[in-house]
Length: 314
Image (cartoon, rainbow, N blue to C red; front, top):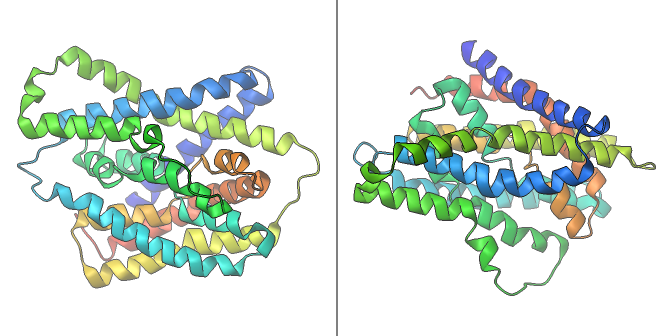
């Protein structure tokens, strides 16, 4: 029951900050142009700083010799998720099938697990390091594959999106720890990156709340009630149940099982509405999927974590 409450509180905190972002934009406390500045601040400065400070202070190759397996498990998870998404997408209406599939496939793989793991184990837990190593290729994968959902042709390689700041910083921090040169990193640098990193979750959730306000301010938006219900049933319940069943069969380590379960159970990534608009898709329905999944996760995520503990113990 303690884990249920901890998970519920972690999700509620995220949603509460999102509501704050909605109110700040609604009351014009923050102008619309502010959101354009907050996005790179959150994703290209605050999040990389959080990753760097955590790996530098918590990662120990000697105590975790199998750390290199984490990205491989992420690859396996992503391949299975792609298969489940391809099958599940046919349950949606044809005119919004690409948006349905996009929202199913790209999960909030960093910020939601980060908040939950912090609530469960503390802000200096090695599980956070495992999360960053597990998702090391996720940002680059996300920004370079989403156009395919909208039938866009393959473009020239965009190295800036492949070598995302999160990827660069993760590789740098791991290399520093592997070579033992972390002892030469000044405490001042670590302290600065820790303070910057603490802004990452609040910034991204304020962005989410602000973007939701602008979408729902538009008149004439169609509410896809049936599609929303189907989406929540598949994304928030069916996906994690399937992966939990697979995990009980495979019996990986507790850390890997926990990360995979969280990846399968969290709502869609908050950037989905933005990239959908850029690709010419239906941003409104993607936002509806996102909000419904977020709200439902107040219940579904704690339940899934409770079920997880009946099969896996740290």
